[in-house]
Length: 237
Image (cartoon, helix red, strand yellow):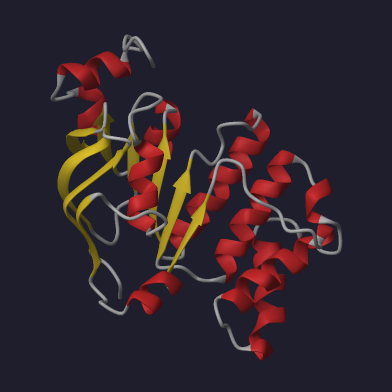
């Protein structure tokens, strides 16, 4: 087990501008965690810090399993606009498995299972780059599914999709949750947060303003900033 994930006094700054103010928190297994906040609040940066894509300016990000290589293998991240490799849909999943050093004898079956899980088995031989936006996002989730991650990070996974594609992606996210993956998702979509989240981390101008169960956050926000965000009254929301 690589959870819990601990962020100890973590901050991030670029060119002297603080993007994430110093924060300390622990991400546990089980509950689905949604990171909420207006555009520019620091949601994506916080997710990248957690996933290890960028290093904090100060502080420490630590997994329960101190073996960094093993911890990396037990997590996956899906972005708002996934990068598709210049190969087939199946080839994209196989590449992810090989990059994770999965045994060659297992790769084919795991790739096929992942494509079936996201409803893309019939498109396995098709070039990934000609798939629709929703199909590409499902393929990104298939690459993650094949890895059987303990933690799945999702950065605005449906922000550019239509309602039907959004429903399809949300169904796959629920399948990850049911299979035991810890979901950590950044979004500014309040309805989606209520549908998929168990707890909310609310960011405002790079600061972690509050953390609470989803129902509590939406019914009884503990801060004026959260209340304004829920009402759509933040000037940059």
